[in-house]
Amino acid sequence: MSFFSLIPTMSDEYLSSDNEYGDMSDSSESSTSYIEHDQQSTSNHYKLLENKHLVSEMDKILDEVRSVTNLPKTYCRILLHQYKWDKQTLIEKYYEQESDAFFKKYNLINPSSLNRSIISVATRGTCNICCSEEVLTESICGHKYCNQCWLHYFKTKITDHCDHIISCQEYGCDIAVDDDMVIKIIGQSAPLICRYKKLITKSFVESNKNLKYCPNPECYYITKIISIEDEPITCQCGFVYCFKCGHEWHEPLHCDIFKRWLRKCSDDSETSNWLNVHTKECPKCASTIEKNGGCNHMICHRCKYEYCWVCLQEWGPHGNNWYSCNKYNEKRDSNNHTNVTQARAKLNRYLHYYQRYANHQQSLRLEGNLNHSVEEAMQLFQNEGMSWIEVQFLKTAVSILSNCRKTLMYSYAFAYYLERGNQTDIFEGNQADLESSTESLSASLERLSEDTNMMREIKRKIQDKCRYVDRRRVVLLNHIKEGYEQKSWIFTSD
Image (cartoon, rainbow, N blue to C red; front, side, top):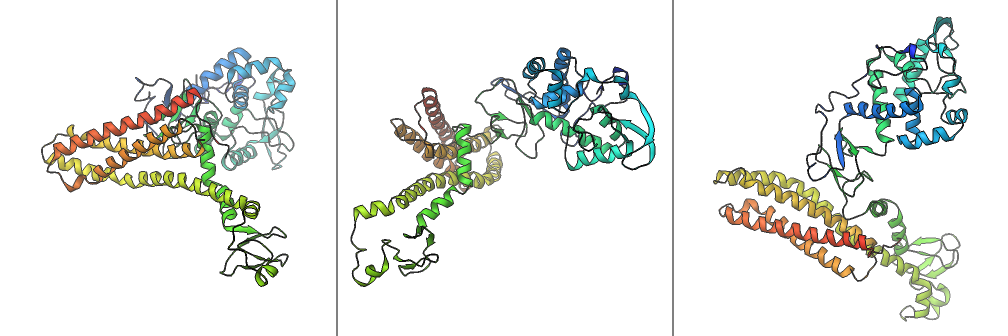
């Protein structure tokens, strides 16, 4: 029985068949039934679910916990959310801790101490909020308000605060309101009840370590992991991503290095490096100064110290008595310019890898238009006598090219953090081979429309290049994987 078709209160007498909330999905989002991954024959470590199938997944876990703890389903849902839907850990903690303290920690009342009859009682009285004589509905904690005040409160919590666990509206009371009471009060508002159901399923996915929404914002499928493996997730929408970090599949980078690289590219660390390279500190007060004119006679705006921009020596004797900037002083240079030189070297190294990373990223975007030209070429080839099956090699070539671009893109981020060692030269050789073969395949696909007179020869050449570039990609990835397994790679802390 569905969680939303049976949301019990503290009393079994309060169960009602009128609470029918079986379908959690939005019909506009998806209409496909439960879907196994298209390549399940080669990968059995995950399944793809739709929103409407989350209820059965949730109910399965709730029923297992309830059968052991004998707690109401609302309690089970709230507690499982707190324990990230890890039923084993929840059950262990439940029996390890003293009951009252355990429930109080999560803003719940120990169900064994409840007066079960109060849940089904509706009394008439004066509402403390609107001061009108109405039928009052009582929450688990004992606080009573009219249904209209409860409705306004629930609407604010659900619509504005996006709460899926709603506390009592009494000032100072944090006790969670029973799901069945929320459903009963908001039951007349279809949009509100739909939003509440979605908030519950969303919290189920986001707090469950074995579930994850597809990162594609236009997709509504959810991935359920059966076993954790370093393999990509291919969603029904075609997006390929990493389950561990939720980003696009980033092989050969491990998630920790990938996240470091993203931070490196987006934060202000490189701005700091730029400042170190293009600015200098006043020798007296250490204020950071940027040179904005041609004259090397600098006057610090803070301390008014006059010095030479080139050698950082005092300007008075430097400018009037002698001029020594043309003479190289190794000791002075070591003392004054070490930090600047190191910062410049770090910046240049970062830019070397980032520019190549960004170049392949840009190529991927530009080659997105390649699909259109390839489709035109496929039509031309068919007009010249090739069958539909025979021209599919072009689509395969575009897919292989895209995979190689992504591998190369992330290989430069991998190289940035890699300390030089015996295996580095082999890695760079494999990387260079993949780079050159990828560019060769890209050039061949770009020139498809220039000549269709030798279709069979063009097909042979492109297929040969596809086989070669795919092999080079596999060689590069296998070498990196082997290095991980043998712990040959040493990464910098930068």
